Length: 103
Image 1 (cartoon, rainbow, N blue to C red):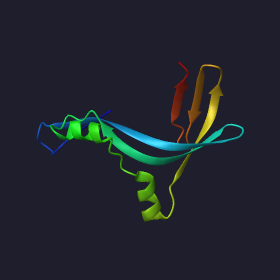
Image 2 (tube, rainbow, N blue to C red):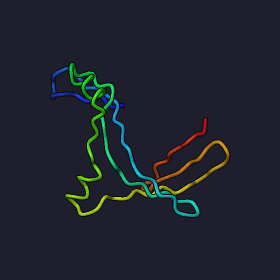
Image 3 (cartoon, helix red, strand yellow):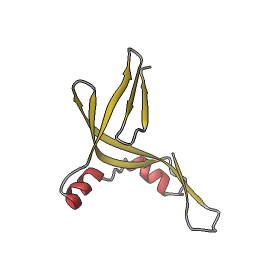
Image 4 (tube, helix red, strand yellow):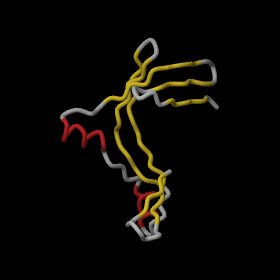
């Protein structure tokens, strides 16, 4: 979820949920390579724009933009720190932790 001010000093905030899709490549024994494919906004509080974004299922092809501007789509590597039948804990190159649970 994201909430940002429109302009400094004006008490109006734009809110929404940013959803990013990515491709995942599993590398043995414990790495995931992730590449961003696209990004969209759901549940915006901007009148008229909120319903349009949800109805159109509009996704910005961020991966394609990276390809055009940089010549490649950057890869993020996640390394598994712990895994069992119900939980996986990974971390990225900046030591941020991500916890995935099985429901």
